[in-house]
Image: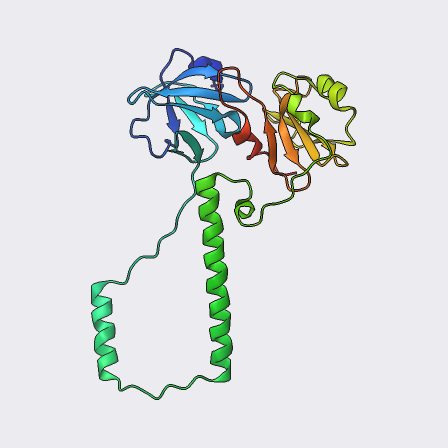
Length: 259
């Protein structure tokens, strides 16, 4: 049987697969849909979230036992929004029996004089370097989760995001390719950052001499609309399109396909 579309979810209850972490009740209704995101309401708690369409998979072809909307990645509800979930790996502690056996072995073995060879000293230095790198990576990951940053190192080393002009600030979410070019002039380079068969199309208009990149998005390559502006070359979000009922496209700008 063929898959249903998002429009088929209106006035029907459905569940996400995999379920959104942090929400106990996995039953939802579709309340609003734009070209970039959908708004869903939890039938149990009444919570409402905006979810970018690039996180969504397909709708099941049957509602027996329940209609399913697939997700491309695991999501987690926190801080009033929905974000991609990051897994945390924890080490399994040593069992009490193992610790007791180790203590018995240590007690039966007399201590030996401590001597560090040159090779041991080299290994110790490498171990210190490895631990330092791991701690820095953990700090960067923590800043990325808490701040929702595209590049967490920006907290420690703020990049230069100056541009030659800020004419992009006048662009609106419904501006087409021709309206963007009419306002900013022709781009120095155009680049498609999505495949022709993708459900959502993304296009980058490079204005390298001005220091920014205009990002367009649409359901097809003939319906591209303004999504936001990135700094060139840091790719930091400089501007995002505003929705009529509140919210913006900043979350989508931070999760663009690599280009």
